[in-house]
Image (cartoon, rainbow, N blue to C red):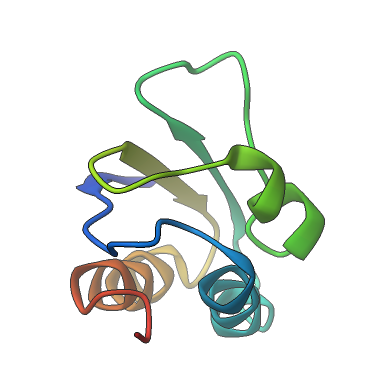
Amino acid sequence: MEKITLTLMNPQGMHARPASLLTKLVKDFKSNIYFYKNDIENKKYQPKSILSVMSVGAAKGDKLTFVAEGSDEAEAIRAITDFIQSGCGE
């Protein structure tokens, strides 16, 4: 299992465009991937579903913790880290 907590620095937060880009980024990974916001572990979101990502309502400064479990978990976490740290494609 790979896990990382990242701070969302995108000024507009996780709106439709970055949510769509995140979903496209992770959809081909074989690992089971989920995330939660601001250390609230009982509410998990699925990044492979744009509706799930949009329902997070993540804003600039929110902490998103991503967890990946599977054969390509390290690759998945690396790709997600690069995506979030680069401003979510914006």
